[in-house]
Structures are given as structure tokens and as C-alpha cells.
Image (tube, rainbow, N blue to C red; front, top):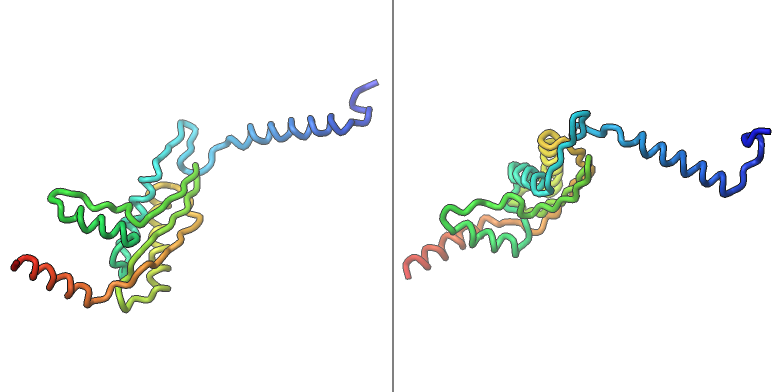
Amino acid sequence: MSDKNLPQTGAQQQREAAKKADEQKDNSKELRGPLQTERGVTTMEDTVVAKVAGIAAREVPGVYDMGNAARRAFSAVTDRIPNSKTNVTGGISVEKGDTQTAIDATVVIEYGASVVEVGDNIRENIIDQVESATGLEVIEVNVNVVDVHLPEEDNDDDSSRKNNELQ
């Protein structure tokens, strides 16, 4: 008499189900996306994605600056240091997996620009640039507008600099 003809107990059914799940896991190790090929896997740090996203966000018309007030103040100080480099990752937060990424962008927009249009353009440009540059699928881009830059603020900054230089 064959074991196949006997009814299976609950424990036997669970073992069979676990065995099938293990087989499916082995089969799921197939190549997923352009970063995983037959000849190897390409990996990248979160900062790579953040830099690409930061540059893409800054390219959008209507974006005045990136990041919250503390980050912008720090950038203002470092920008005055000779030969210092601009931190393009400021205002960008990335969560990255093997094949997908989610990005948060914190921006200051120029007065007169539509928050909706600038947000949509930032989202579209980040998705296009990150997907084409990294091969990762961008599942979401959240845009947080933290301030509006007023034209008068430029005039105030220029006059305060002139007063400081005269003293």
C-alpha cells in the first residue's frame, strides 16, 4: 500500500506547504530588474539616489532652495567657505531597496509659483532622472513645501550685506 493513498495529517500538510514555499523562494531568486543580471548584481548607496534626486529637484523652475530652515542656514555658512562644494542631497530623504526606492523632497518655492505645478514637476523630474540613472523603480515621491521665498528677501539680504561691508 502506498503512502500517497493514506490521508495526510495536519502536520504533514503543513510540512508539504512549507516545502512548496521553500521551492517557490528558490525560484523567486530569478533576476529582478536591470540591476540584477546573470553575470552579477549592481548595488548602490542611498546617497547616489539622493544626489540624483537632489539635482533633479533643483532643475525644476520655481524651486528656490532645498531643505528645512536649519539645513538652509548650514548651507549658507558653508557656501561662503572658498572651494566648498554644494550639498545636493540636502532636502532629500531616500528609502531604497534592491529594486525600488521612495523619495521625500523638502523644498522652498519662489513666490508666484504654483505649489501644485512645482510639486508635480519635481515629482516627474525626480522619477525620470532616478529611474533612468539608477535603474531603480521609484514607487513614490513626496514633496514637502516648507517655505515661500519672497522677492523682498533678496533685497533685504543685499542691503544687510552692504551695511556689514561698510562698517
